[in-house]
Image: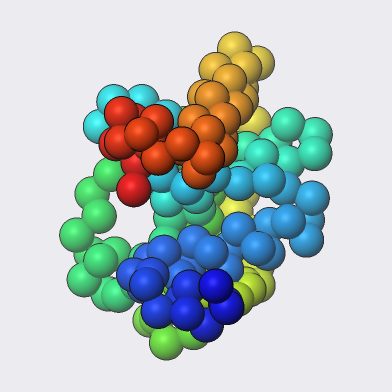
Length: 155
């Protein structure tokens, strides 16, 4: 299916996640979407870097989307760096200055402000790397066998 047709089926936040994931590959990061680090939280994009670094990127498609998000600070303890990903029309002055900022669209992204680094403890990093690997493996298997995706609640 051509790129433009794929984009027609995506919601605004999914478009941002797609562009972010593409951009992360340019930095030698791999990524997964909608990973659950712990009960009650689901990150939009999690990136795993070549040295094991873990980044969380929250995609916000509108002012209301950002203002109704009361869980984002809970993500900070599950990553080395935290970023917001928004489109070029988003009012970025709403976003906290002490977080990373990425401007994205469905094709690519650009890191405008690097999120501050807060290194994960070794045990937490191991748990998150394992969750990342299992999540990625389930997604890959679900792509080949949709019934697996249904069992895990994947679209």
